[in-house]
Length: 170
Image (cartoon, rainbow, N blue to C red):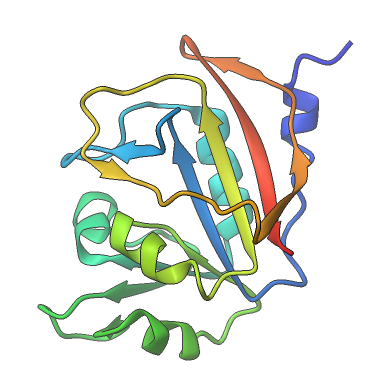
């Protein structure tokens, strides 16, 4: 009998996709509020780390302000307001500068919205709860363009129910 965790840890390190999105969302595609995430799910954080470690992560300035540089990864920031190493004015510039096997768009909302056209795969954690105080949202996934590649069993953690879903572009 599976408790969901066995299947949850079956995620496979990406190998055939250059640009992916990784995100966790609530029932209404809630990503967070102005201060960050609305939940704490260690299993989701472990999946995030396992998938992104050794690769490039691309984030907007606000996301970087909240989480900072992530160790073990090449960190790129997209911002028109700041300058520096690994900071780009546009998302397409950052993607074209990637020199790792894989890069992940990790937020925020604008990065996900603009980035949808560049990605081949979406690693989504779907949390079975509505978060009324959310101010930041993930774009809708057009199922005419995407299909589910893999889906975990339901996982229970910190009084929340969630599952992992990997989408690939059709």
